[in-house]
Image (cartoon, rainbow, N blue to C red; front, side, top):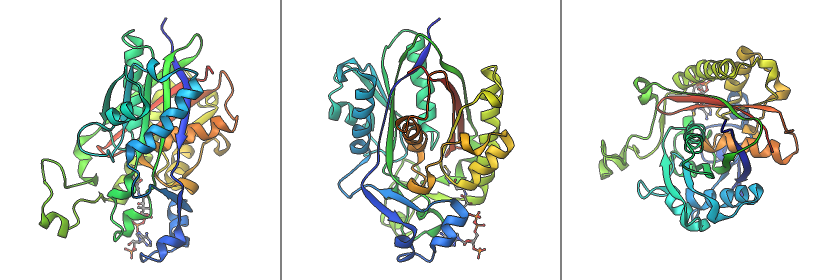
Amino acid sequence: MNKIGILGVGSYLPEKKVTNFDLAKILDTSDEWIRARTGIKERRFASPDQAASDLAANAAERAIKDAGISQEDIDLIIVGTNSPDTLYPATACLVQDKIGAKNAAAFDLQAGCTGWVYASIVGAQFIKTGMYKHVLVIGVEAITKMVDEKDRDTYVLFGDGAGATILGNVDKGGLLSSVLCADGSLAEHLILPAGGSRLPLSQEVLDKRLQYTRMNGREVFKFAVREITKVSLNAIKEAGLTVDDIRWFIPHQANLRIIEAGIKRIRIPKERVAITIDKYGNSSAATVPIALDEIYKADKIKTGDKLLMVSFGAGMTSGAFIVEWSK
Ligand code: COA
């Protein structure tokens, strides 16, 4: 049977750190409020000349090196992002050019913060069918450019970064289960209203600041806790495992309180949970691969460990998959 695993991992965080204290200078907020309500202490901001493809290319180079393959070996690039360089062409095509993966097909996948989880499962199908051998899957955001610095409800939450993995065939372990969900009836709760075909950019749009993210925080919070629990338990069941078999739970980093409420319901002890939100905030589709890379680089993952990766976000979408580590 054709087993699909993670052959390489890499991530990239922009250098600029923005602390809660920095934000309290420009917004009616405080370090105390942000920490208590979200768990965030600081986040990274892309520089004015850095777009999503720049961050993504850095993470991709690192993942390719880690996998021990070359750029030419990449058959497909899928980029999960909510902050593409431009609406078109796809950021994946820009990454393809930047890293010199000249044999790769490339496309973007829009699934809110669940983008990298969706992209991983989509990428795995190409390997499963035998169509491709190596798929580069990237979660990337320069999303701080798409939140309103005048809106304290959203501006304090987000950060920028990129995480990448190389998927390919493995002899043992690999992908054990995958779950994808969507509920478009909840779309309005997390939305960037303007700049698409529904509401093209105009002076009126700019005056109303509709070119920035709008969020109904309480509704998103409720959805997040419900979904993180549901898709995690479904992925564990589909893999024929129990919660105790999961060595690492790597959840989307949107709010520490969401993670804590989720792990309480799923019954995963906190020492088995990867947490990066304090340092990087919510880098949307990039949080899970960044957190994966962090525990991997810290030598915390052993061959045979079972990793549960889970996310939720705009759409609204949610998804999870379990991988038995085979590196
Ligand atoms: N600083 C200080 N006060 C703030 C604030 C900020 N940055 N943002 C909101 N507040 C205020 C509100 O105005 C409100 O004031 P009021 O009581 O006078 O009306 C108060 O804090 C409480 O607001 P509330 O929205 O009830 O807080 P909360 O506990 O729900 O936390 C979020 C707000 C946004 C942190 C939380 O709802 C959340 O994390 N939601 C999910 C967001 C998310 O995950 N988004 C990404 C999904 S991928």
